[in-house]
Image (tube, rainbow, N blue to C red; front, side, top):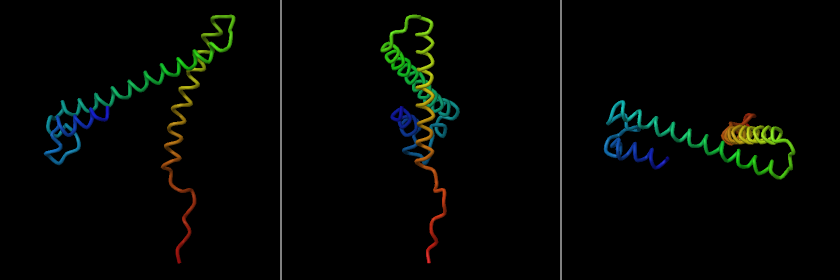
Length: 111
């Protein structure tokens, strides 16, 4: 998707020739819609892939235990999948937040 965005901006949007940052400069509304569409497709792809990966991991972890009731097995699978997905999203934002967070204390004064 990064290469698609670069192609949309610099090749199709002709921003390599013009001094611009998006294909809307050369193509108007259709350029802006193409850029927004690629971003939405990326977000949907990540949500679907992350959801499927969490579901597969949860099914594997639940298969390790031998649940006698199908309802209980499905319930644990769904809850575990949801828990893994929430932790991955919250964890990503927490890591990004603490990695770029400014200092909590003032730097020492120089004399």
